[in-house]
Image 1 (cartoon, one colour):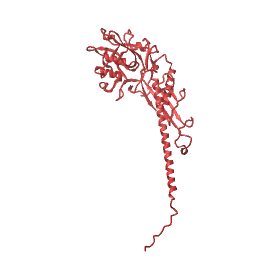
Image 2 (image 1 turned 135 degrees about the vertical axis):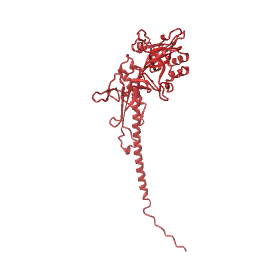
Image 3 (image 1 turned 180 degrees about the vertical axis):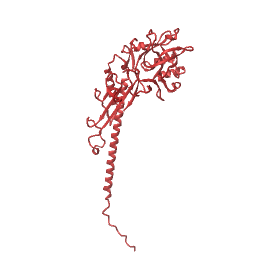
Length: 401
């Protein structure tokens, strides 16, 4: 017979690890919940920053519109339109699942003003003003103090009071523009057009200076922002009629030129530039940028226009782009010449007309445009331009902190 196997009595310690494992799981779960809650709050803060940046950019973009140079529009109206643009942009963003609501009233969340140099400290300070502001500061908060804290995912662990998020963003408009430089994939919003700037003799009224800046041009068209269309009727902005060389006319009779900026006078390239602007390759022969502050800039030009180019311009009615202003024109071989470029402007095409004789004319209004491709003057503060001394038509927006 085999000896019987000893029997072990059940251990009284069996199962004592189960509560410890449960406690560990509970502890890890609580820690994970707190981590997720913190990530949720960090995400809400990031969303709030995105919202205020979008609001500041929208407000600054609204300030850089045609009403800025329209003396028939009160500056307070433009300031109110900018605040409303900020409110609408912010409301299109969600923070913790809720839209961002801004107070558009003066003294609320949207501040308009300028950066001015403080003589004693030598530092720039933000001065609030509604008269042609060049800076927008947007501030927003989700906090218990204002009654809209960020709801937590696990309020039973982190507390029922909710989290707090604060964000601010400032966008500055600068118009100390000296040139244009495209980026890869970001063309310069410009047309290959140069407009006669001024008549030294003061006899011609079909120049940019006389018709637009002295207000001697007619006011027969208006641009509707809501419908993005042009209609008959004045809007406070004068117009200039640009006429290319008609059959039998002299080149000097024209007050607008087609310029060669990397097109090689190929019609398809001119049409592309009219539709999309100047690319990096277009400006390669000029060193990648077009500047009007260094020496004398002369570009090959012609006062004649072909049908494809005229047709492309006709499709641009209601659109605005950068145009060049030229101070002098020198005839060269055939129909070509050289135009001395003096400065930059922005125009909106209101009408394109062709007479029975084949002459093409454009009706253009001055406009205001903000573009990232604008080049700022060297040596000055890059974000704080002097409105009175700068270009009234062209701006660059800079997002600052």
